Amino acid sequence: MDFSFDAVASKCAHQMAQYQNCVQANQHGDWGTICREQGRALTKCADESVPYLAEMKRACFTHIEAYRTCLDKHGSKSDEVVQAECGGALKKLWDCTDAQKKKIDEAK
Image (tube, rainbow, N blue to C red):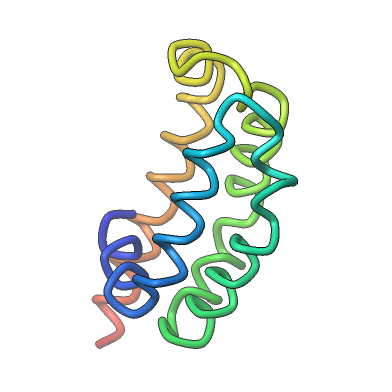
């Protein structure tokens, strides 16, 4: 997942900063809703700038959705609660993206 984050960060630094700033400013509120516009701008930039990202999203869709659902449910709670409740979902998402990265590298 680091490689995807790094690729998006390098291509979409402005959008990522706006999204991160919004989330930080609203961490005790419903940042998922409040920061939706910034999140969409970041997603659009990432999809347009990182060609393999769409393929990775398709391959790891169930893991992305599981993690997103967990964050929707627990995201307004403390970091410790989020880690305890969503850590397993994040690990599965991480494993999926790593497996996809290996496939991408092998195809080169």
